[in-house]
Length: 238
Image 1 (spheres, one colour):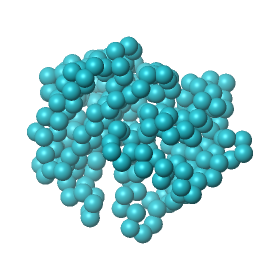
Image 2: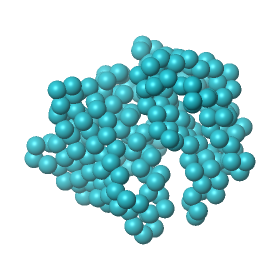
Image 3: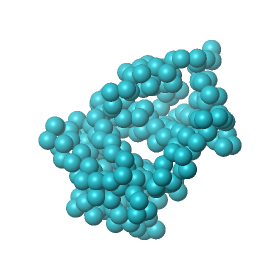
């Protein structure tokens, strides 16, 4: 795969963004989702064989990946440059790039919307031998969705009604702020389609990643149950 660049403009100064890349507790508030192996993953990616620039504007990581920070009048442009993956890891390359796309959007959301509130995540994934299309299964007509930054309201096939703003869109991912995913403000829902990859994933798949803030246990469990039921119905093949 050719080297890829992923960029987001974050409404925060470069020092704040740098701290989000260098302090383990802060990285855990946006990288990936809460799972038993998250601390080890953070150590391997952000601390093993890495190089920091003296001006704290560049972080070089293993396998050629790098973060660069560009201070701007309206914030900081954060760019992730992917290295070229070879050998056994090559089949994972597109998945890794898609993951970074999700994670830098979560970093932006964390800093801009909930810099001081801990997140709690809901994550579900699966594949579909029936080649189910994620947007169709959810009842989302992406052709009628507003542009990023604009308000939306959707009633999904799960029965849930979501409202907020479109956070970002790509060909394979949809990020939505969700009012019900936070006690104050909103949370972030990322829906991602995953294509079939020979030797890695035999059927097309989907990922659901919800970042919630300040919710009680009952509300969080309800969100998790909704998405577990959806995935078990439409993407039951792990």
